[in-house]
Amino acid sequence: MLHIVNKSATDRGSLESCLAMATKGSAVLLIEDAVYAATNGSAAAAKIQAAAADLKIYALGPDLAARGMAARVLDGVNVVDYAGFVDLVAEHKSCQSWL
Amino acid sequence: MSDMDDMDDGSGIVKKFMFLNRKAPHGTVYALEGLEVVLITAAFDQDVSMVFTDDGVYQLLKGIDTKGIEVKDFSKTYRALDGYDIEKLYVDQASMDARGLTEDDLIVDVTVLSVDEMANLMAEQDVVISF
Amino acid sequence: MPMVNIAGKDYEVDEEGYLIDLSQWNEDIAKYMAVEEKVDLTEGHWEVVNFLREYYAEYQIAPAVRVLTKAIGKKLGPDKGNNKYLYELFPYGPAKQACKIAGLPKPTGCI
Image (cartoon, rainbow over all chains, first blue to last red; front, side, top):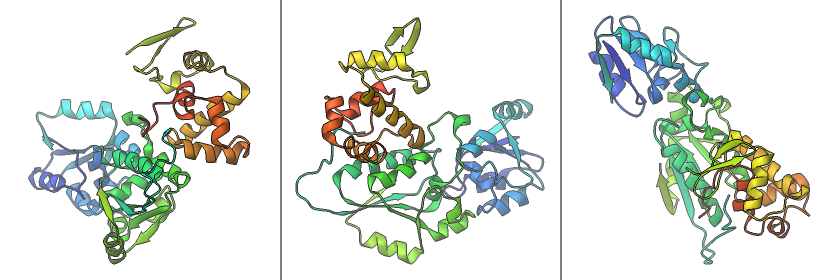
């Protein structure tokens, strides 16, 4: 399953809920304000890095760039563009958006 | 730009206004709306402070490039505030720390305040407007 | 949205005649807007129009008149950085008229 999170982890609990529910081998795509969690120094960085052991973590590149975060992405997080976003949706049987 | 040049209500009363920014820049419209209200307020010659706490500190980051998401890069507009005589910009130390940010990461000069200093600043305002 | 055709090229404008897509701006459209505003473009007008375009490129906003006046004074001297000079060039307001000719959006806070 592909999990999509779009809210900042320092503003809402949706990333935490997502990480608690995502099973081993699932993919988590961070978009919009959720991308801050995948950057160096963020309060959620440790959680993301721990989760990356069992989950594939992706972040949307244009959203990182728009937030001045393109150069601060955590190791182990895969940056994708819009075409990569579409590929992720297409290659997973189902999607869950954590609104 | 406004043709309502130096508009005021003629009373000459100057109040202390704090604009409190707590949201990241693009995920919601709060940051941009708050900035526009501040620019309009500048015409009224009031004592304006802009405060950035929680995710609001993300508004001031350097190196923002919005071409990929096709929205206006209003981070450049914070640098125009000085020309509007809005010089009191404050950021919250704890919010910066929680996001791995330092003053060097920000696009404008700011004063970094501790939570206690921020609380005192807020307490002495006549009006606090939150975005 | 209304369209304006100048020299075989279409430009989209809003209901008040402001250019929609800033990147489309050129001297043709500026001259067209000036005729619409009944402004006879001189070197002094172009100076202000070009200043506004540079200001917008740097800050992503059109400045308030007070801010424009001060900034023009700094760059072009006090004989140009005053309300009298700017309103002589743009009688219906440097905000409204010069921004329109410069292809900038309707100014923030301008009713």
